[in-house]
Structures are given as C-alpha cells and as structure tokens.
Amino acid sequence: MKKTRVMLVDDHALVRSGLHQLLLTFEHYEVVGEAGDGAQAIELVRELQPDVVLLDIAMPRMRGLEAIREIKQAAPDCKVLILSMYDREQYVRESIKNGADGYLLKGSNTDELRMALMHVLNGNLYISPSVSKPLVSEWIHSGKADEQAGEEVQLTEREKSVMKLLAEGYPNKEVAELLHISVKTVETHRSRILEKTGVRNLAELVKYAIKKGMIDL
Image (cartoon, rainbow, N blue to C red; front, side, top):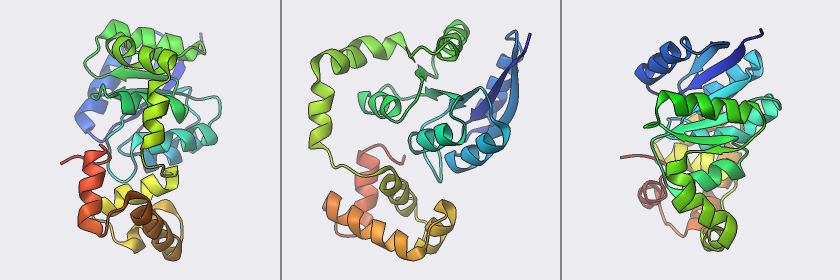
C-alpha cells in the first residue's frame, strides 16, 4: 500500500523530532520533509509535493496562517492540518478561511492526531472538539464571527506578512528579500499598513501585532 507522504512545519526542532518519531509508529505514513518556518515550508512543498502538511501557526519569518494559501497554490492536492497550541476563535477562523483542512491542538492525544489525519486525507474538515463546540459552532451557525471580522482591520495576506516581519525587526531590504518583492513594494505595503491600522510608527506597530497575536513576546 502506498504510504502517505507527510511534511512537518514547526519552528521547534524538538517538536518536529517528536512528531517524526510518532508518525513512524503510524502504519502507511512517512515523513518526507521538515521546515522551520512558513517561507521554507512553501519552497519544500513545491519541491516535495507531500500529501499532507502538519503546520504550526506561530513561527518566525512567515506564520502558518500566511503560508496556507501559498502551500495550496504550490501543491493543490496537498492537505493542510494546523497543529497549534492556540484555541482562539480568530486563529481557527483565519486558518479555515485561508484554506486549511483541519485544526488540531498540540495538547491532543495520539488517537486524535490519527483521526484528524484520516479526516483531512478523506476530504473532510477536522477541528478539535475542544475548540469546535464553544467556538466554531457559534461562528458557523450564528454568523457572529463574520460580524466581528467586519469590525477588524482588513489587511491582505501580503500586508500581514510584511507587518509581521517589520514588527519582528527586519529592515525593509531584508523583508523584500524574504518575500521576493522590491524594497519599494515593501515601503508601499508599510504605508498602507500604518494607514489601515492607525498606528504612527514601528513601535506602535509591534504593539498592534502582539495584540492581534501575529507575534509573540
């Protein structure tokens, strides 16, 4: 039987190692690649074309949330299962909106990981029960999340990527190199971000990014 090809994306090497060893105990699964951030993940997905990616959210350079769409573009048939420590409604909503096939908490047990993989590989949406009942059910059936989203600042995926890198201290030139765009384009995005968020300088931008959960302290 053909093995399911898995790629692991997490900025903690120990987490990747643990997942790798765990997946070795799963029948018909093999780990074909590992990445430490979203940008590296996109490059490897394009090269390796895995069946499923286990993707963390909080990572340097490019968050998992921003990487989802580009992973899907690089490998349309690849499934993306978010594996995160965060149970915030905002993260679940954004993940699914950006194309993730599932959302699993890092505190889940081995059986739930196995179940989540089976669900997404069969074309179904999987969300950890611990977040699906209190959060996602309300979002889907009441429309409350859509109303809340309308109140939030609407940044494009590219603007979010630029904002995260700027907030982490990368200069315009390095941001341009990491995102493969020109310095002038970075400056344009920066101006639009400041205008949309209403912040006046980089220090306020950092505070805004932390508040929105885009970077960690």
